[in-house]
Length: 198
Image 1: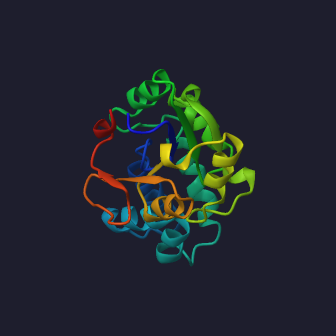
Image 2: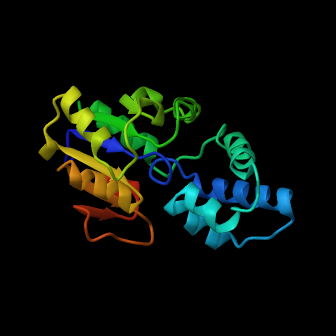
C-alpha cells in the first residue's frame, strides 16, 4: 500500500452504479414520454453529472428528476461493487490505514454502504448533507485533512471523474484516476482496475 489515507468517491469508483443508473434514466424517459434514448449517450452524460444528463435528455419533462431518483433508489438497494473493492477496503484497514469517502449523495449513501457491506471500513463518510461545496471544490478534502490531521503526502483521492482529481489536486493530495478505458494526465496515477492498488 502506497498511502496511509484513502479518500474515495463512491459512484463509478467503488460502486458500479452507472449501468443501473443508465437503465433507470432511460426507463424513466420512456415511462414519462415514450422516447427512446441511446444507452451509451445517457451513460456518458451521467458520468459528467446527473444535472447534465437531465438537461440534455429530459429538460422538458416536469418532475423527471424526482421520478428518476425514485427508480434509481430502488436499483441501489442492491448495490454492485467493482471487482476487488471490498477486499481492497478491508486490506487498507487491516494495514492500519484509513478509508474516507466523499459523496455528492445525501445520507442515503450510508444505506448504500451498509447494503454493500462496506460501511464498516470507513472512518468517516462526507455527504451532501454536510454542506460542503461540490467537487471539484477541495473543501471536503481539506476538512478531512484538518479533522484527522492527515499528512497530504500520505493521502490520496481516488475517483472516476476529472472533478475528483481536480479536488484532490486543489487540496494538494495525491490522486488516482480509475477508469477501465481512459486516463487523465492531471492524476498522480491512472488505474484500469482496483486490483492494481492491492
